[in-house]
Length: 377
Image (cartoon, rainbow, N blue to C red; front, side):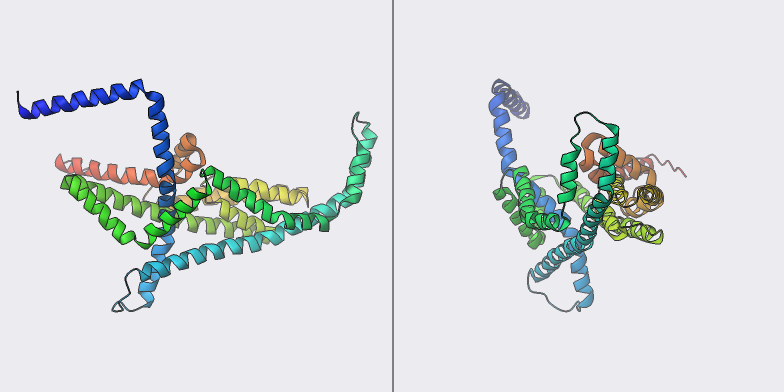
């Protein structure tokens, strides 16, 4: 018997034994896979965080190279350290600005709601009394309205801010299994960002050491394409969110609608969820305005929908879709299909994923047509 054939038969027998053993111990296999998943989950989260933070980090690195002479020799890793610090400071600054812009508007909203309840509450209770609704305790409602104090309410909210933040943090920690996983994910992200050159070099060494050169070249090309497309998508999404938030703020301000800045900022933040987040912000803004002026709330919905229509049809496909090389139609279809299969996560990540697949498929099709000497105009 041929030596190669004998080796293949032995490998097939070993594979069959492994599959049979796994099927006979399926519960243990599932438990083992779950244990492996728990072990690598914080690493995956850390890599995702590093990938997202690497986009602004690369922008800062280009900016530093632009302002400092190319002949200047940077100490090893100093460029990455400075860029990472600037990235983290930028994120903190953006979050602080959002809080500073939104929080005063929310306080004004609570104050106006308080005044509206104090003013219209007695009339509403009298109207309920006139209807003689069985089981309705209007006396307790009247007592609640009389004792309502906006200052106490705001103080309560302020004093509860720490516990609310702690609850949110605890929820996030539970979602990631434990605080240790959160810390480990952050450590992995920081390590990858600070040593991304060496990490990339080691990964390439592993590929070319254990795979054929043709396959290693192909994997590196796909990885480079994916990195470029996802980076351009995140950059385009940030630009699109800023444009939508600015358009909403300007439109509301020109029409004299209340909470223009607050709703604009919320719309910009929620716009990171393509095609869906802006509608959530629209409903939130309408609820804020409804308690001040129902007619203006209706106008705000019409204006927000009009702005979103213009943005969705003309701005988003060209800003985000153009940044990843997709046509407006494919951008919209990718978001729809991603949302159908994977919800919000699918909406966000299916657009760059579709762009990668589309680019690879287009290159393969063009190569096949060139081999067949077919030219299609």
